[in-house]
Length: 507
Image 1 (cartoon, helix red, strand yellow):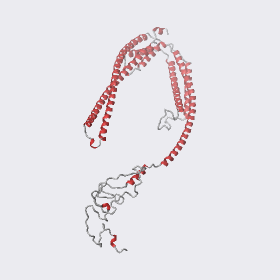
Image 2 (cartoon, helix red, strand yellow):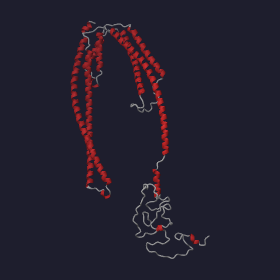
Image 3 (spheres, helix red, strand yellow):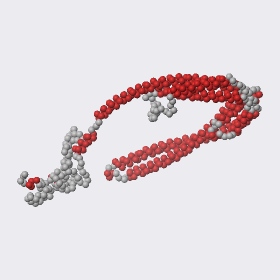
Image 4 (cartoon, helix red, strand yellow):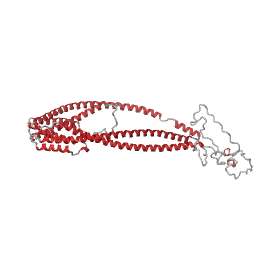
């Protein structure tokens, strides 16, 4: 053990009980003792030196990346008497100002890392990662995609083969159904011809009834404002009543024929519906068969890969097709048997039919005249309305162009204000006359835009009202034209076949 125990004591920190008292000496201002902490030396006037330019090698990396001169043990920062952290004389240890030994701390900041560590972290963040994983993932995905597309191609080829088979089967059944439709259509026409023979004796009476009823039926196709019980309607109803009073027919046979015709029409409608379904399905499957991945009519339809609720089995479909044809053939055979038992009936005509027909024609002519006058007036109003709509739409277009011009001026004013507010440095960012002018211009442009927008809304509202009135006029004109078409055209063609009293007498 050394003989001198005071050699382990720090003369600046540890108290010395046994050491000799040092002689007190005084230094001049700015002088330091020889063994004082150099990092805690007091400030000397004139010690601040001009900045030394930093010289970087020509091939040096950017300043934010590690430099050859960076230290790996941290920056050596002394805590001098001046600096942003200057707290005065600090003599905790001889290394009191070293970064990494004791952080340089004051009430404003704390140093965590050195500049070299900051640059090293930048290099780490700029270095790309997971490149090998990306390459492996790319190769794996490409291989999986090739296998997946090959499997999908095989599945699509198999589906196309089955679709071709299904199309051939549908075409065969469609041909059978078409033959059945032609047969029932031919039988229905033949039954109607035999019914005409049955009614040949009474056609003079049945024809006015059919004409009157058809006229009433046609007049029910008028639109709602014209569905009025006018004089023409009253006279048509009287015609039907008169025909009913003088009806003399053989009801039993005719009823059977009518019933059979209904059966024929129902069977025809059923088989035609089946034929229509097969045509739609055949067209759809043909369309599906011609589709490919490059088709322009394909979309995503979520939830379609499931059996629909109304799907049937293939066996039931074949049974239904056969039963539909068999039922239609049975109805056709019954119609053929009934045509062999047809009878004719004779009824009498009446001179009142001609008188009533004249009254009905006069009422119809009066209604047509009034409707034509009203239609002409409505068309005149519609023409004026269309011109007004065109003028308002031109005004709206003009307002739209004006709003676009105001918008461009608003962009200009806003850009000027942005440039002056955020790009003028320091005291240059002042409220000069140009700034006031720009602010006033922006306010005026905003007010102008709001005013034009309000005008645009008013014009749009007026146009909407005009369009609504135009629609009402067009609907009313269509209603009147529909009524004229029924009363003047269709009813006149139908009533041209009204029999004369001589035809009744010669029946």
